[in-house]
Image (tube, rainbow, N blue to C red):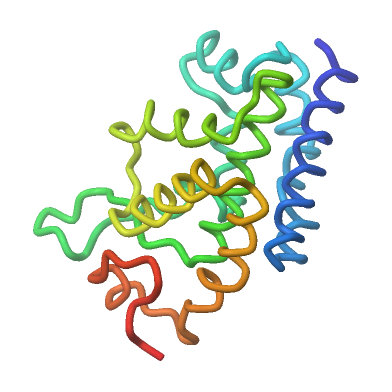
Length: 199
């Protein structure tokens, strides 16, 4: 068990996400990001399986067949697409599916992925790493198609134009275009990340 190492890692990650969120105008989300990681049900498990080079959730999963810390975490943090998995009313058999995520949480998910790539890759981090990680696992993601398109668009924007331009785009274009009274049913029909047409 490495309490200090785990505390340093999750705090470094949290502070990075907070800075990223602030740059996108998401002040409340930046402050509240990942606070559940400091609760005993997540923190003690993380310290027990801490390795420093990858998420301790993976180590717990390998040891137990599931991750209790992750199950607790994803149910309390809306920036994870897994939080938005529910029974689909649009599918005849009502199977589980990813629901459309509000843009402010997609933006926080972007910040989260960038920060995680920085923390775990250290000096080898490049602006291409978050996109590479997304592409490596995207076939397994139970994510709403529109949410996936939006996240991939933002990751590609980051890869092409860099962090400063990406965060500026998110703040002034992407988040500014989400209509009031967000309507997932209507929004999901547009592949264009610039808006769903309901103003």
